[in-house]
Structure formats: structure tokens, C-alpha cells
Length: 216
Image (cartoon, rainbow, N blue to C red):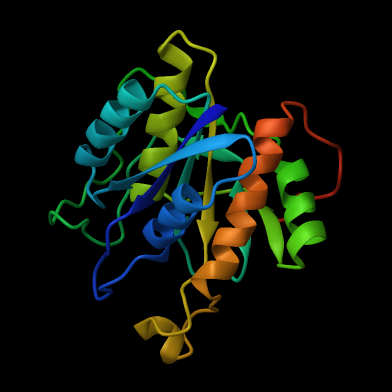
């Protein structure tokens, strides 16, 4: 049985619900075959989110970590790269709003995901029929903060752990989706997509060469 850690976020801003956490719990309850999944909720707060994440990694000792966040995108968005900067358009849940601050002083400018991102994207499309993409940016808010912090932890911890980050859409009942401001997807569909991402990443370390780039 392979151990995996899946993280989601607490509700943020006007939302009373965060599908990233709900989906993480669904993966814990119904993991891919051969996997044991622990779901952990992270605060949507700079600094504190990485403290909780580090404690969870050390406690569960996973072979793979999949962090999940909420976005305004319309499908399963597999992130390619995390950059070493916090630059906030809005405050986090603690009211913090860092601008142009490094996540890890003296850390590398960026880390790539160590998941087979294009293979994951392709398998989500094939197995679920959901729209899936490789994303070239995780933003500069708490999602990127967690993604970079995760990859830095995995790179410096000394164990052969792999990890990455995936964004999922709002659910249809969430306020921004109701107003038509963002696309939406039922949380069980997002959880199915994430289950494919996780099973694919656990089964494969190497990626495939398919077109998933971007012009901007």
C-alpha cells in the first residue's frame, strides 16, 4: 500500500465551502487502488499553511503529495511550476497581504512539479471526459505559496518523495458560479479527476511528450 498525502484549503473570502478540501476528503474515503490517502486541510494563510503542510508530511511520511486549490478555471488544471514570490492582489484569511516577498529567502527562483503532468492531464481526459490542462502559472497567492513550499520541502527533506499541485473549479452552488463569474464543476466530478491524477502519478514517474504549452 502506497501512502499519499492530499491537501485542500479551508474556505476563503465570501465562500463558506472549499471544494479542494471536500475533494481531498473524498480521495481519503475512496482512494485509488493500492493507495492509502490522508487528507489534510490547510489554512488559506501565508506561513501557517506551510507549517501545517510540513507537520502533515512528517507525520504521514507519504511517497507522494498532491496539493489541491480552488481556481476560476473550467477543469482539472495540473500545475507545471511554482515560483519563489508572494505578491498578493487580496489579503489572505489572516489579513496578510505580502508584496514581492520571497517564500524562501535565498531559495531557487522556481521549482517544477515532480508529477508526470502531461500524462496526468491526458489520463484525466481519457478516463473521465473532463477538460484538463497543464497550467503554466499557479499565481502568486496562497496556492503558489503552498506549491513552492511543498516542492522546497520535498527537495530539502532528503527522502525520495514526489509532489505537485492541481487547481479545480468552483462548484455550481458557490456564489461566484451562481453569478456566472466563473465556470463550475460538481465536486464529485473534480474528485474523480483528482483520483485519476493521483493514480497516474503513483503508477508513473516518467512523463509523455504531448502538446500542452501556452502562448501567454
